Length: 562
Image 1 (cartoon, rainbow, N blue to C red):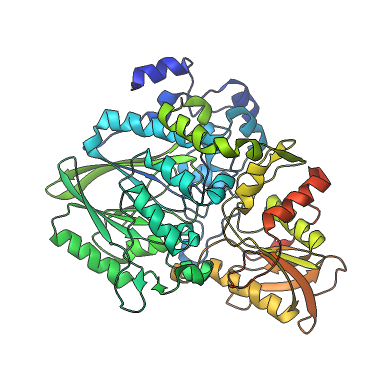
Image 2 (cartoon, helix red, strand yellow):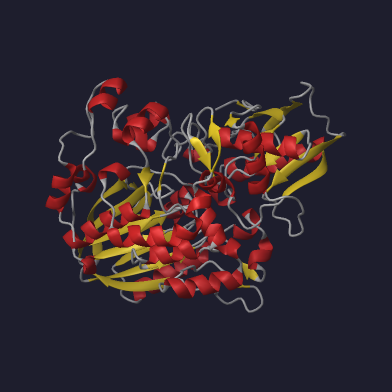
């Protein structure tokens, strides 16, 4: 077992996280210490640890934070809808510092080269073990916020088992889900049995008997305190993903069920109530403002990362990022059966500063061994920065759309607004691992069909309302559908049906005619019977042909009025 002193000796260099110097000076001089990463202002005896949205990434990654994250209505201009300097100013983070790199896209390429990748399950395991050692393992709860199993080559080839077997070594206490459901009911049931800890979700019901599919709540004794963890699976799973994967099950936010479960937990003697949620940040902000009695909400789904928990009424809300880049921590002091004090932090997992946990590292090596040669097979090289995350197209999305238009001979391409998918720096080799980090899923077929201009507008308006409806209870997940071969203007603050305008075909510059049909290609359709080549095969062929990859059609969206 590593002690804190061991880690300090391992790091062996001195610096600080916040030095007011230029980016270039910091990149040349500033270092990251393990001691800084685990330094924490502890309160009380109870510790909650949280990770979420790992999306199949067992190893450290680059993952560029968004350059746009628009909030509307009551959520405009507040976390998590802050980027760049607004984010740094709000949270008091010095530009160019390691935390600025971890949380924003500013000077991303330069800082990525200096500070390296983040994440890695073996690195997370090290941090978890140190915290358990310091706090006492009987005082710590580790909670998995879901979207853990899907999103990589090995997760697809092992049907989720690589992630289940690896995460199990961290010894989580409970889990919720979203993309886990895309493995299908049978496989999901099998993997839940394999993981051996509760898969909680009080908002999923059998439609025939109107009975809950999963336990809503698990109780734990930690730090002499009875803790209730209430689970919340992603409420719009049958809408954002193919419903045939969960046929016969009904989802939803189910606020009445949450209230009932909170009241039942209090009656059962719970002194601390935690909502382990995959609702998304804004949904849980609204829940915290409405439902009394929840002490902590650990939220996921929207991939937002904030440096510490925010307080809404009497509820602490923490979102712990994605792709294994962070580990969330909240310490609680309990007095007279209630939370009296707290401290919180989102720990960025700078992989070069954290030694690997040998048990998890060896397991990752073994589970990936049969696939390692294929995962590392080089198929091309990045020209510029390749990334996905943001409300609108990223460069990876542009390339996917380029590949669809060329390979399927279409005028327009549509690509889902997925938040998962890692980043490549300029002039990096593109491997099969990188390709599948963008495309690994169980419904990968690329369709080709005729769609009228009117229906194209309706598609964009519908997705826009899912993202920019001022009531977060009507936001049904994801970022904006990515487009290739066409451009448009988007006004997020406008009403439903009035957000999208000036749709133009890029090849001609002409406005999209609502009465004309266009040849459109896309993937990730939620329809059950879709035919076409898998997106990962199509994209591999495109990258191999192009060799050096840059977007051919970009800057497709102009945002107005915000």
